[in-house]
Length: 441
Image (cartoon, rainbow, N blue to C red; front, side, top):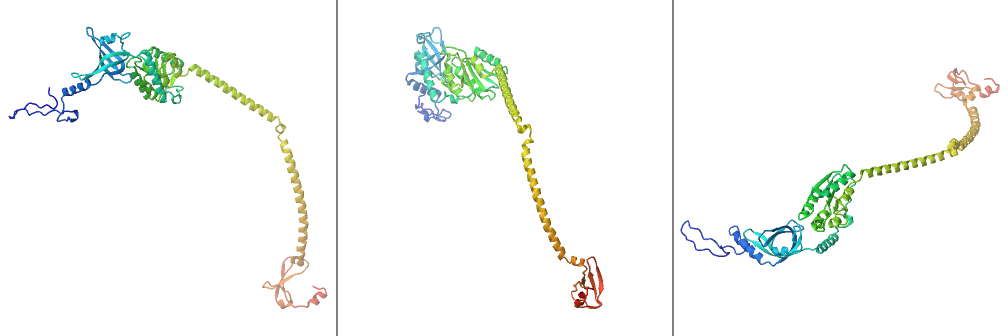
């Protein structure tokens, strides 16, 4: 094998002979497309680096344990409890035999191990030197610590919890495969409201894949616009069986849902962190079926009760209005409505009579004045003078003749009389004293 930085043997210079190879870069940062490392060199360097790492304590869940007959080595797969990541672990069988009750798949353990890198397969694995199970007390302490962390972030606050819809169009149900929890939820909800529709996701609710499968199912139903409420249901079990529902990753996935989530895990005495994070906690799967939909019989009875109360209220209101109307009609003013107008009518009639008398007196007074004025006008009128036998003489030009000088002898004059006019000729003039002295006209 060629070491990094080593020179190859000197090659010949004859035509067609291989050209001398260059030295390998001593570090990874000095490699390039023209000067790469071979795979064997990289794996050896990784192996050397991993071999320098100290032993480490690591916690996980055993998802697979294999013991081959006739060998002293057992092979485990240790999985992270929050994310889908795992590492192979090899251990002496005596470590497994020393555990109380042995080592079952799904158990949580703490392993002290040395990292090893297998160069031929390019695989990193752990060589265990000590294996210790995680006790119930330790699990409870960790759950309590996680509870305080979630509470400090406000994920357990009541004000962030979403109310359930009165009548959901579709209920999303996350449950185990062919589980009693599914039957309890579906049967109870269908009995209460026969038209309810379910979108069921059957997943693992126990074991290594429970957290990832439940989280994925919840996220899928939350993205479905037709699902109005999500129910996560599982039957009862031991603390270890219910651990996935106190997992931080699952709790945060449920807290991030836009759709209301109902937690129905185990029985009344079972307490998991999902109950605190979910919007509604149901004591059992059957209780969840009662909570997500209303009961038809109860709603019909409530509707009939409301209609009865409304009918009685309307009747009471009508009766009160009728009584008020009767009281109004019994009043004298409404018994004889014309009585209300009698006094104003009498007042108007008296006012009209006073006005008529005042007008008649005024007219009589003014009639006397008018008669006197008419007599004066008649006395002063030229027509009255003409009525006494006088005449007004006018020349052809319309001038009034006032003296004999205005009408020479032989001139024709028009004489206006009281009724009509005549034409006369001046034949002579006389003295006024002679004319009026003897009384002849």
